[in-house]
Image (cartoon, rainbow, N blue to C red; front, side):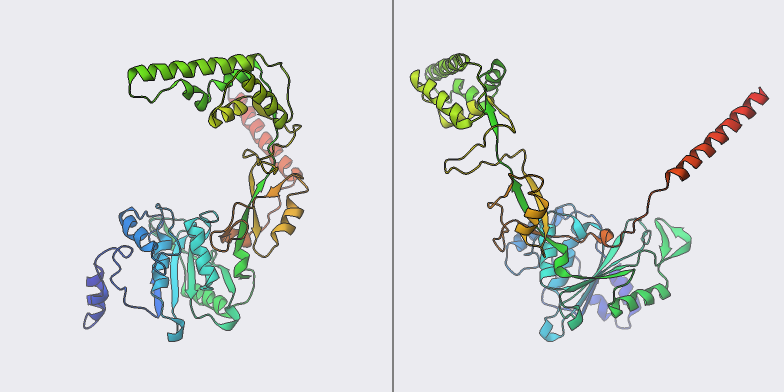
Length: 431
């Protein structure tokens, strides 16, 4: 269909020869070419399962089309964008400009370190993104969702370097005289001229915002809080030990011989019985220090000649413990506080802000015993936290609308009450 259309629109049909049959993602048939201008409107939210093997294989090759990352399998829009970037002319040859229409998902879907975030990071850190233009809703035949034009180039003007322009053109539309499916609006020639002027002027206004590219980046740090547990050999907690897999596995044998399997299972059941007897003999003391409880536990086991496997020992501690903010902090073998995974949290620190200053200002006043985990680091720069990028477009153009006054709401309620009363009165008169 595409070929036939181009044959009809050109004298010699030459342009039609550039149309190739196959998948752009897995069968790149223009891999040896670059272009001055690249335009696309890829399918919104369309999965790329059919191309998965080819795309993931190519993504493993450094410098390939998809080496920056791959998005989730349910949406391939960012793959098409990477494909277009790969077909830009080198800056030394004048560079290229890309324009692609996508829905809102590529702007912010994906957490720090995800494929989507890494693709946005790659684009922004290479300073290719010139502008994003929000279009009106209801422009397309089969969907009324919000759509955006991404404008990219590898040859930015000096004043645009390190900058990104966001243009809110969502109100630049005219109603169509006759709807075509979900398409109820259109952008007039005058609107196009106005949007183009806003882009070219590169000035901040009510519908145009200028940002540093770093403004869209953040570092996601992991905030830890210490593990605090109390310990008690109460009947309820001892009963929980039976549900621990390591303890239950004592009475399970992997021996092939039926005889050996029986012997091993019986020995395991006997050890289970001895452990339970020892724990049931403990006084009903509530320990607020793990180290203190461990001393009591180890002494009791040693007295009875029982050697516990590490997994079983851990199972006993887990079953007999409960979180307790008043308990002492649990320390590891090096004497460092152990983190409580249930209290683990994260914070997104803007790239322009110092992590420690942010932590001291925003976190410590609320949780004084917290610290930043040094085990979660960025895969590329090795610094604390994972770098992420997102462009929450609507946030930058949000207009606060104050809630209605209580007086206005009360007046509406009284008016409705009056209407209901009038209806009831009229009904009674008819009866």
